[in-house]
Length: 205
Image (cartoon, rainbow, N blue to C red; front, side):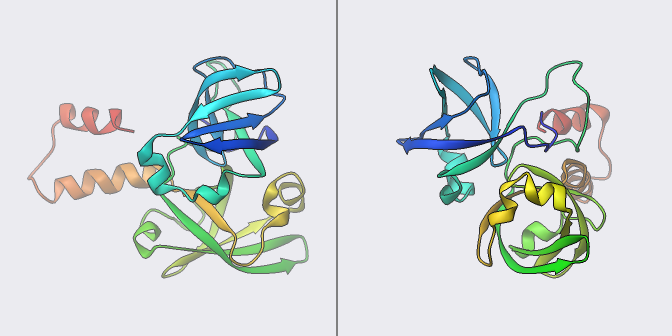
């Protein structure tokens, strides 16, 4: 599990045949889970200047692989006893989006991000969302896009300061919204669900 707080801006040094090589100061260990631009990946090799991670075919089919080059956000998975900040992030990308508008404000910058309308169902006004691994709060939700206001600190300390119209982003919607929607969808097919069935669904997240 992650929190959506970026711990380092690392650099992709190589990406080929499902293997992603990262140059990073983070002292990774073999088998660690690390989110790269919001994608949870497993460390398969530790190098002198970083580490290698492996991507499953299913992951590659969902994300935009252009996000796996140059500088990237990284966040190591939480450890038991860590202070919990941000929001609950799984590192499971639900869809990709694209920046469609950028509007400077007096004390922040508004970003409008367009996504597939099917993804909008789980994006909630004033709820949490993860954009390229960054925990953010949704301001408004429209038919096929949503609005974020990024404060200067977040803009300065993430790669969002470089985003332009058309920049692709990885999106992870709120886990609780997905969970509730899944339960309700199953409930509509049956009269009721038992606790055993709910436990099975919960373990799937």
